Image 1 (cartoon, rainbow, N blue to C red):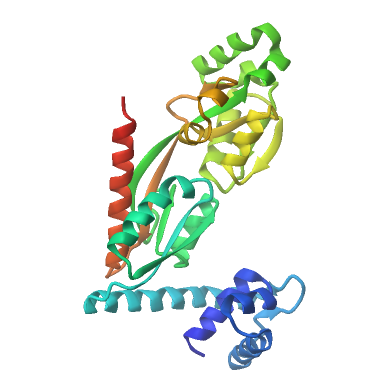
Image 2: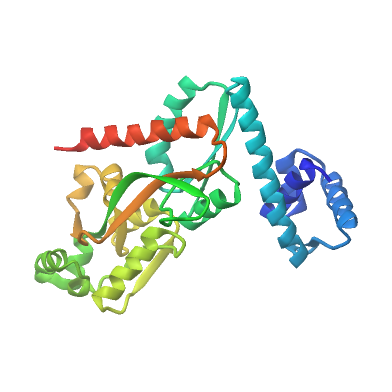
Length: 315
């Protein structure tokens, strides 16, 4: 058993398919299957149920935890000795929400690569809880997410605060409320409650995203029975659905400003959800006796970029 054993098993556990895992690892399916079988014989247990889709046995779930820790330790070893040798090369794994990636990363990565050409970047996108879990288990080096305060083993630095609003088309409001539409939107914004426009169907993010959880708390405090028309993992999809009058979507104000120009915004209303409807974002990495200098360099660059963007956007 060696580091390759860990890499092979993690790929198989994530892909849940010998075919896809073999393609990802650039090995034959037969070679991968034989390698896993050898590990099973060495441990004396079955690690996977060879079904479609493939599943892990209890022993396989336990072994996956060890494999992920071995991967993280191996990567930390290589990173620390790269710093000792002054050899700035390697692979930086960054996790971020699928909607935020295109807003925050292109400029930051472009600037980072100019200063660190020997470091390649791998981006893993997913829901907030997935990104945090990837950081905790060592699948990535750095996370841009809402990280629980005081999370054990994680160093987190504040990055930005994002205001959540409700975006709804004027046409949908007119259809539901006629001449009362504007008055109802004003009342909803004044009270930060959805009761005045409760007949509008809602568009909402999944339960593993902080924005989705916050949206559900707002619905609950409004005391309404939510009519959720669409669930999605991508805020941009929900914004486009809102523009088409499918429902009212909970979304960060920054995404609205980035996606909709003045012409499209003329057909929309933005409901103020109040000062409590704020999502706190951090950039975080695992605590360690040695933190890879590349991780800290990218975090510093990203924080400065966000501060610069906020300064430019301020009136």
